Length: 304
Length: 196
Image (cartoon, rainbow over all chains, first blue to last red; front, side):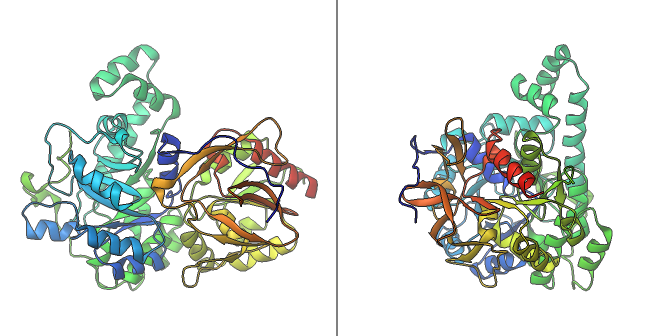
C-alpha cells in the first residue's frame, strides 16, 4: 500500500440524491427477482440477478391466500441478506413509514413501497426523503411516477399487474409513461404549466422531464413478466431493466428460467439470442387473464 | 486510427453514463456486447453494475477470454466500481465461480464500505487529475486490499486505495460517470490516445 497516497479532503455524506439514484443506475440492464427463501436468493444470484426482492409470499400466492399482505418477517429478510452478496430489496406497505423504518434498520439496500402489499394509508405515501435507504415505487402513468419522485423515490417501476404472469398491464403502463414523456417534449414553456396541473405533479419535475426526454430516475418494468421474450419486450418498450416476481419461482425450472430471462434482458434487441434463451424452459407459470380480474383484486389501482 | 472509438462494456450497469462521460471528454464512444465489437475498439470502459452479473454474462457470451487477451496485449481499460473488480487479478471474497478479466496486480474487497445505507459521496484528491478534488460517489463500493509493486495508488480513503493505475489500466472504486465531471474520463481518453 502506498504510504504517500492522498486522502479525503471533505467528510463523507450518506443518503444523497446522487447516491440513492446512482444505486439504481447500477442496476440498469438487469433483472431483479422476487425470492422467499435464502435458497431461492442463491439461485437468483447464480442466474445473474442484479438484486433480489425478499418477501414472504410471491404476488401469485398473495392473490391466492387473500387477507392483509404486510412487510416480511425480519428473520426471513436477514436470512436472505446473509445468503447473497447482491443488493437485497424488501417491500413496505404504501404509506406505512414504520415498516420502511424497520426495513432501513435491517439494512436492506432498497425499499419498494409496493401496491402488492395491502395499503396502510389511502391518501399519503411515505416521505421518502426522511430515509437514507433509497425507495423504488410503482406507477401506471407519468403523473403518478412524478408524484412518487417528488416524495423522494429514487427509482420508478411501471406497475403492471403483479402475480398474473400476464404482461398486458406492464405493456399498458410502460406505453402510457413513455407516451406522456414524448408528448411533454413537444410542449412549449407556456404549455408545461398546464401540463403540470393535468399531471398533478410539480412543475419543476415536469419541466425537467420535458428537457431530458426521460424520467430523472431509472425506470424499470414490473408486474407480469414470465418469459425471456416478455423481458425483452419491456426493454424494447423503454424499460431500463425488469422485476420478475412470481414468473420465476412459480415456473417448472426456476434456475433455468431465471438465467434465460437475464440473457434476454441484456440482448433484448437480438431475437436469435432471445430464441436460444427461450428453448426448453419447462412450464411457465399458468397466469391469469387480467380482464377477468375483479376491480378489488387489481393491485395497480392502489397508490394515489 | 484516431477515430477508433472507445468501447463501454454493455452487458449490464451504468453504460449510458459512461458513454456520455467519454463523449464529454472528447472521445467517440460505443457500446460493446460481442467479441467482434470488442475487436473494433481502441480502449474499453467496464462500467459500474453488479460484478457477479457482469462476470456471469461475460462468461456465457464468450467475452472473458477475448477481454483477457486484449488487456494482455496492452489495450487501455478503465473500470469503475464493478469494473474495478473485473480488472483485479484477485477478489478477496468472490462468489463461487466469479471470474475477473484481471490485469491489475491487486486484491479487491467487494462491498468494502458496507451496504447501500453506508454508500456516500466525498471529495477526493486524485493524483494525476488537476483542478481540485474529484467528487467521489461510492455505491456499495469495493476498495483495494493490497497491491503489487507496479500498481500506483492515485487516491485512498483511510489507507485503502480507491483509485489505482498500472500501465494502461485504470480503476476507481467510485463513479465519476455520475457527476458530470469528466476529468477521469479525460485522463483515460488521453491514455487511449497515447497508445494509438
